[in-house]
Length: 429
Image 1 (cartoon, helix red, strand yellow):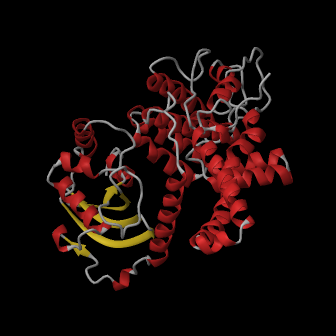
Image 2 (cartoon, one colour):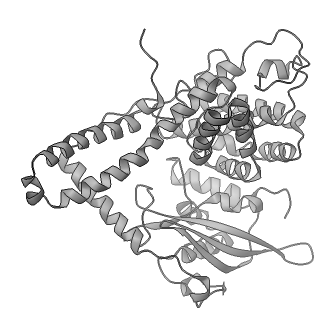
Image 3 (cartoon, one colour):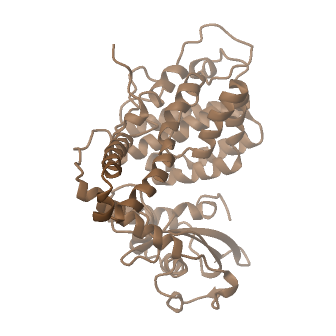
């Protein structure tokens, strides 16, 4: 019987490991012939950088190590899971034991984790439709009302998988929540989690449980499911299902043709990596006190071209003018929908509340491709204007939607719609 495949065998990880092995062979050959250093002096630096990259690549093993320890307990690795949390949980498990590691993981699903997890729901239609319910579940969870949020989250998980797969729900016997080259949808991930959570519970049980057994909870046989550990595990399953949905939207249900890489291509990539590294080292985040035009009110054209604050200001001006096609072009997307669909979705989301004016307050250059632009938006209220602040996340991308250093030419700033969640989806301002 063959051993089950690991997450590290996924095409993306496996290809990286293959290149590492090939590069190590070339490195050994390079060291064996001293004259090669004179013929190819630039390779010395490449091999030195490779050692650092290989050490960092140990992170590729973390999802398998996590699932080996935690999948049977109701936790699985998934793309959007914090790698720091994943690695720390493994460390705690190995040093302090299972219970301490589970408590650490449950505590990691705090207000910040849920806020960002729910914000990412906007990237998928079926998840976006359930934002209201997710917000209600978050309120109950953070208030310790686990008896209320657990059944709600379980029902959401089942319905979401049904709508995304167009087949059956998460807890159906014939469910298929696998995908090619996806951590969450690996056979050791959501598929194994579904089997665990649908185990039969044939007797009424009054003792606390630590695994969200769906049938026992929703059919009234588990009478002590209302605890943080069970609730956190359902949140984790829900976020993992979102990453599976993203994989399906990106065409990862069926394997893609393998792309062969040549040695010239590898060396060209190393050269490009060094160039990118130099750009990163040269970049310096700006200090708000040194930006003369802050705070800025009104015309976006008065802000410098190519800056995130200019992109955010233009976005808001398009919002004020109900130019939903331009709004759609400016947003960061994870799907390949047509511009018409994106424009319709932008109108649905941004047309409910339209600001009357705005002010750019501050700018935080968080990374080479990421800035947060703090803005104040004014809306019409009953009797007097309503002021709302938003921290707008802008990401600098190339034509293939890959992040790039902001000093590179031909990129553009994209706006993360989740930045406006509190404004767009609140019942009232």
